[in-house]
Image 1 (cartoon, protein in one colour):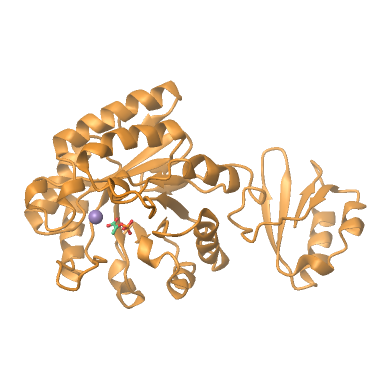
Image 2 (spheres, rainbow, N blue to C red):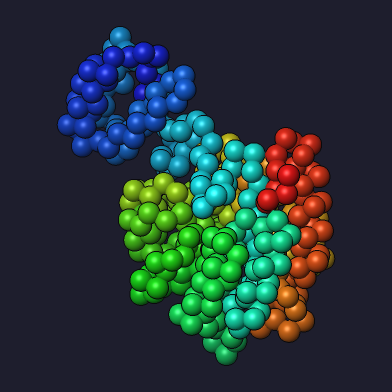
Length: 340
Ligand code: PEP
Ligand code: MN
């Protein structure tokens, strides 16, 4: 349920209304906008007397929220949420670019690739240290040693880093990580989501391989329920019957999610397609569809990559891709990466 208050409602009367509602075991999420204040009620609101609330002088309107997600619901927070990471804003007309290799392999590979993506306009760096691989015999990532190498790239570039957490047992190693990624395979690892709700770092939450948009939003709600509202949603392609691409990029997820939620949406064209030649067109489509960011795999030598080389751009191709996306964004009054 949401209660929209009248402009200029006196604080004492608002407090009194809130105390009465909280006494019924309801959590209130207050959002003060420029024009209105919205009280979002979370809990069993069935017993709340809507008519009695509507009758109050300070109340503009009362609405029941049918969707199971509340805190992430746009009805609770009509304005877009903009997430700040270092000097970068994700949203608010800035299409943030997160780029780097699938996996951290060597110091030379990660530092060189990261320097090059910075040069091409990336705002944040990506790189996997703990890798979710289908086969136990595939390269599993360098683990904690990989994170140390990634911190060298962070230092060399001055850019924030994004990397995937595969197990809560590793959380202590993530102290200097700027954005924690929850991969597609862990989207419904509810214990992990609950724990990340207690941390104060932004979370990049990827859509599960076969998850609906509502399930993605419910997973984001888990993080919100713990108190962490810094959530970035990521569409990375879903399983369909099509075999020409690794997954099917659900580009309509961008406007759909944005209509349902206030959270920023990032597109991963690399895992969505599995083919480097499709990354640029899908990145452009993502920008045109209104995405707030792109997460793109780039490797300084894709042919030698230990993981996902076929979908990795060279730094040169990445640079061209960012420029093309900038042209699209400029039509929309937006910017891409650090390109103006
Ligand atoms: C990744 O980004 O490194 C990754 C494994 O992606 P996903 O979880 O979307 O498959
Ligand atoms: Mn990958």
